[in-house]
Figure 1 (cartoon, rainbow, N blue to C red):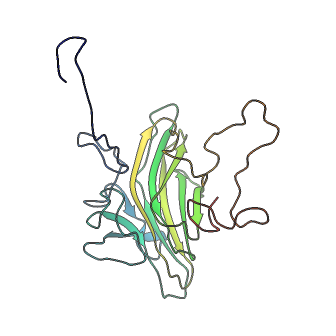
Figure 2 (figure 1 turned 30 degrees about the horizontal axis):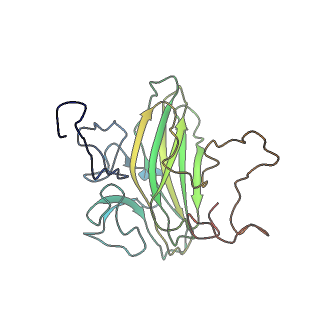
Figure 3 (figure 1 turned 60 degrees about the vertical axis):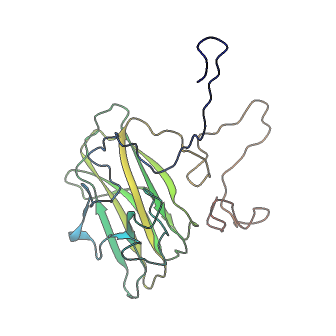
Length: 242
């Protein structure tokens, strides 16, 4: 800034906003985890799974089927959780479970996480919710399968439960799989979920609504679902995109 009155000038330069980088003074919640140190409050559900989620860093144990970098740091030194390929002919399941959660906001809680599923055709990723009680039933809150293209993808899930509950990340690989699925940067915050940073229409219409004078409607469709739908979308560059 130059000058001391209304003739003075002020300038700014090099503003940068980077996805996945946390402010140094940000205090993580009890269910937040970037997996850089350990699993935080998350744990493997040994009694109900066949294999474990692996905590992976490409600088230590590179896997060509997984992401080239983690989401938190954006380079090979960062850690993330992964379930990789299998040569076993049996279906296998890995489950990563939160501690017990009690929503403290009347509007519930919003979980954000990032996932990576490239060149994956035999692995299914689910997010399950279990309300603590006599029933063992678990609700599928979100599910993805098949390849989702390169890069990390953002997901928001809104939990409105009044009772105690847990959240499970379940990866199921079917017979001989040749891909990998990874998750990173889980956060759980009070209130409803914000709009995503961008809308790729993979999780719905992002609350876009018809404008004034609308004669017909835009619809979220699966790529390669028939003429005249394009065979590939831009987000994933595959028929799996929307």
